Length: 95
Image (cartoon, rainbow, N blue to C red):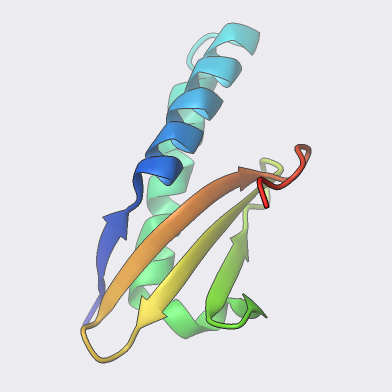
């Protein structure tokens, strides 16, 4: 059974910024990016432990087509995924 996905406000802002950026670069590229992120969410929900642990309990799923990492926490007890960031690997981290 697939886990449910909860998206943090920071991840929503990351996604919105990426969509706007890519739509400015090429028509509908941002929307194609969003569709791909959704597919990655589905992959994460179906097999949450497939991505490597990077920081204590935070897992990172790299995107192949775009320079982004999807950072999340998988809670096996509640079968929930908390998406923390959709992080552009070309920028510096916030911490």
